[in-house]
Image (cartoon, rainbow, N blue to C red; front, side, top):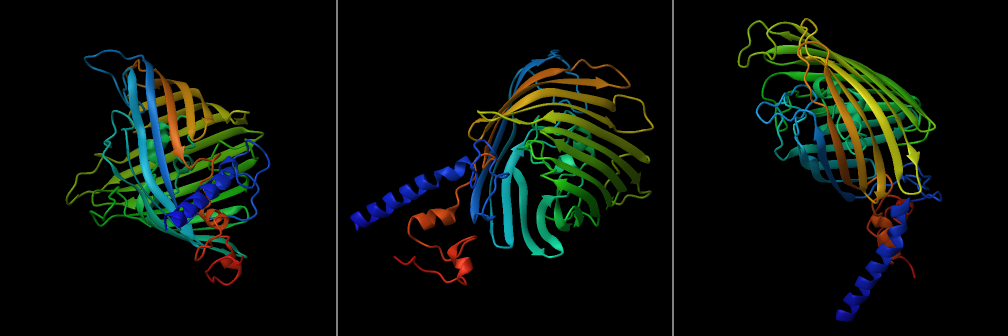
Length: 421
């Protein structure tokens, strides 16, 4: 029995070693090309893949060094010199055939000094999805805690953000995840999505009789238009609308965006509008604003992605703007200018970067609060290093799983068993 176990262990280790080339870009004969862009004989989804993310910041210099009363505002987390964990997440994703899922837990630092969000460990993602491919396109049905799909930048994975944080306009005007259901359909170069959500950010139920309705329409050609760390030509343009009602107020949001990429040069543009109408007789909670309020914001980001012999480099500059009340001229009118560079995976699963953040007020008192930041990110899996294909591992062991994406079972009617010698 011990000899049999030793043989199985040796076989497993050999299979894992033989599967290691998948980490370097499955199906690709081009060194350095991300596995997601590489040509693959068939698309597969591992049954279950662990996911991990840690993003750490080091504030090397902060212009505001008053220990008594630090000035702060929109877009300013007010981090003094030292280290900070921006995000830490752990989860599981996977699927089989038309079904996939994701569940992740994590914690994150408050975006700025005015943010009501703190950093307890919470449920980040918890969704299941059905995907159907037909001659008329691809339809996806998603249920659970998932991406609302309102803003293009908000829908970009935090692992792919150049500065590891979103623009001030996106943070304050765009919902990222909510609990609900959505259906999307893609046909050739057109895409549409509608969803109904609880709104209010409650993960385990609706705390009032409100509802959030979201709709998005977009056009896209070429490569992935929801990331900038790519070199394939792409162009995407979209627009979204949200209607949300609660016991205290009615909120409407509209957004337009565009991402264009050619020879690694990426241009991302986004504009957002929000109107909050307080109800005359709130039953339980007061409205967030006393009177009808219009808020606006937007961003322009120019970046360049270049593959290197050791990883890839992504320099960028981004200007974002946010006005929390159009009828007021005060420190709620802010601009945030980011400039810096991210070095993508000089070693497997690790990103490094540094940048300068200039914050300024268009109205009101001028606050001296610029900073220099260095950041690092660890992510698994990543774009360059695919997770192991467990189906292939079992094949190399001489065993065949009961069923698996792209496995022999799919072609033989789903009958399990051993490979014939």
